[in-house]
Length: 129
Image (cartoon, rainbow, N blue to C red; front, side):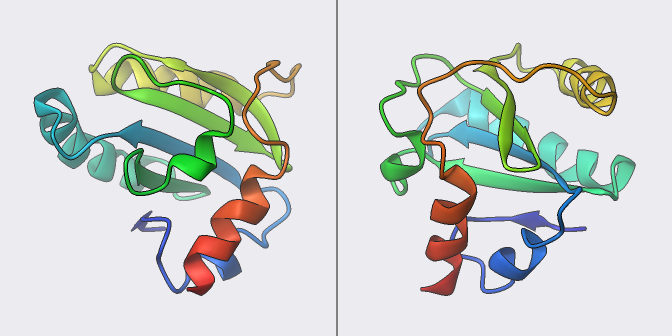
């Protein structure tokens, strides 16, 4: 898989895969930590070919957060079967995210957040233009 951005023309089609794990990184273009983290996030794609990685600039796509506020970067959301399994800030060490993704690959409870329940649908809409 590739690193996607919400406006990608192929994102909606990719999100149609029912068992797909979706890993979103909410960051901002002005954030130095995000600038350093993005190439590592992009490289992680190769280690998890069955996951979809999406880089979201919160200033360009605030609607994807619903009522949630992002106070620290990077903030990660992990979805499976269109359910949020994790939402929170992680340290900007890619190996932490890698371990989190590995842990999420086993079935478990979803995390309660105020992210929009239709986040997957909102992502699909942004990629359709």
